[in-house]
Image 1: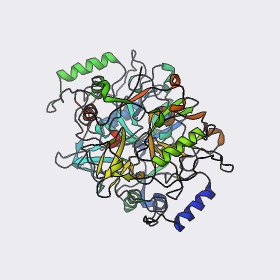
Image 2: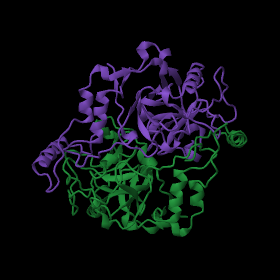
Image 3: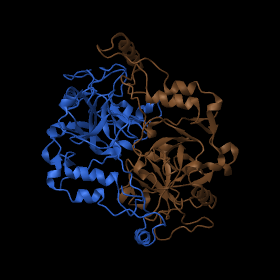
Image 4: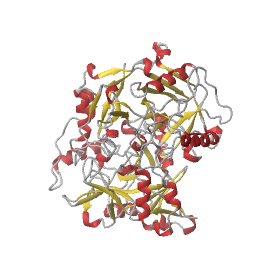
Length: 306
Length: 306
């Protein structure tokens, strides 16, 4: 993620040397600083946490597994209902039915007429668009200002926003965040159709939709589906739908078959350094440090346990 | 782009009626307002301009044509050099060599050893990362605040930023913007390798790279390439490279074979209304209007002439 170097490594090395030797007149080179990769490399085990199998969902697609971490603090009823749907095998055999460029990919029931019945899961829930501030006990604020909310930062690995005046907190629509499709009614969603952001963070959806989690691994599987030609990117031909083999809670998968991911703790000093490495990049490639980071550009490091 | 409705239109209509009849207690429904689609529908021919064939480039891929509008005001030497490269047929037979998730897709010469020679084009140029404010005569400022720059808005259809204090203006790294790959040296790029943003706008690249234009049509062709498994998303196997049939200036293509796109004039009252329709969406689907728009979320309407 560091730059736009060509693929000729010798040319790259030569260019790096040249840059040191001949910085353009009047433009001092930025000091070399730890990069995000350096910060991650210097992290300690205490900077990371494993995923909780009870809050981790596997979306098994033909091309592989998508790992989603759910955020029960922000959407307790929806996360609970999604767990129930997963355990009812509601999603198994359904499909990815929508892919809209710079917007979202969405899955659910492709059959408009004969909707798959639910067993014990609820077919609609009260929207959980925001929660009381006090529910979100793990918020670490970014110093950067934001246009959409008075305060932004991270809550245990999820990008979040809050308004002390209204006393509410909510998850932010950044790349890879997972939300609950709904109809016009605020209370018309259930979690039976979920979407993932695959473009520039549509933050104007914040506080309008229940956000239930984020994709930890497998984004490239979701983001590269052909875009749908129907309205709002829905596939206009049934054969374009991408079948879902199964959706499983990690807790229900034998230990040996689980994906072993860890996420960096966003309340750690290491995470603060990781963000700073992106907010104010050092040289030599970077010529001007941004001095700011957008919430949705803040890195959320993930690593696979060996 | 309006919502997350299911695909059952009867259910949708029913839900819309239900929403009017039974708005949740304590949450007044937002008034219905013109949507972006309404604003576009009500526009007049004067709100649109055609693309200038001398500043329009066609990237012909196996799956179709990508149309790129270039911005000579912001990168005169690079746009000139790219035109020269195109007319030398430099790009014809080269390839898309990189696709990095939530970042960029990039094309250029896949052959690290035997680089394709240039004829009259220059192999490196002084970086055009910013231009004097006075060069950008068509800036229309957004009222919204931005974390990366003192002022943001649009310059003749391109998202741009500026700093009155430094007296400089520059194009912003939003989804679909086209930039010039470079090595470590600020002056190491030429336009022979170009990239397009396919994720959340990496605005920290602003003022660090020469931005030459934006994709007007064909983003879904670029954004859905399989992500590369090599470092920085480069394809690690030559057979994954996507061949470029040809790159052409629209001016060199017979009129009948040209793509006929128009873009909305960003200095028009209609454009102001288009942005406002997104900044403060009306009901019934939207429950909370954002009251703000991020530069990279501002719509840039394009239409195909009949």
